[in-house]
Amino acid sequence: MQVTNKELMQMEQRERAHLINSVGGFKSVCLIGTVDVSGQTNLAIFNSIVHIGANPPLISFIMRPDSVERHTLSNILSVGYYTINHLNETIYRQAHQTSARYPKEVSEFDSTGLTPKYKNDFKAPYVKESNVQLGIEFKERINLSINNTIMIIGEIKEMYFPADCLQVDGYLDIEKAGTIACTGLDSYHSTNRIERLPYAKP
Image (cartoon, rainbow, N blue to C red):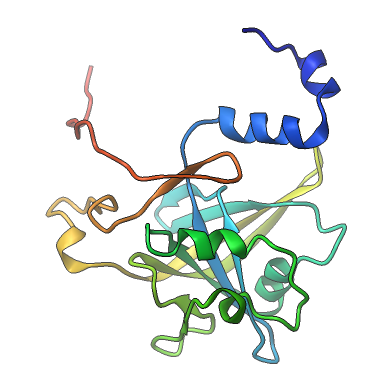
């Protein structure tokens, strides 16, 4: 089956969004936890987490245009800190529910039954039920003029994960930690490693 760009652009909007979101393959899916200056927490699901570099340890995600109120974005810009929390099979339904458009005064933590957890004076809440948690400091906002989306880049300041998931070479076995993946906007997947290969050389 062939689908051309012209046919894509003639598709119904949601149908096109489902196709383009799923054709990119399996992706990480995480909950981003934030808080505003008054202490109101927010929790939102994102499937656009991208590794930027290891020195310094940078990670990014893509946010939709801020033509409407984006609580995650405004909290990050005002407070400067946020958390990235991996999903697992016990919380993915609650995590998915955070994509609903709750008003700012309603915390998705409360609405979904997930638990905000503050650690070591870090300024943003972690998701207690997540097995892999990253504390991030906001570093850069890049406005993408091609479609008005926003790339948020942050530096990893601290992380938490099960000790037995860290390998001697630094590799973190997130499958062992129970991390799941997603495709599209609403399909969640457990993983099964095929093989871990050695560093490739010519």
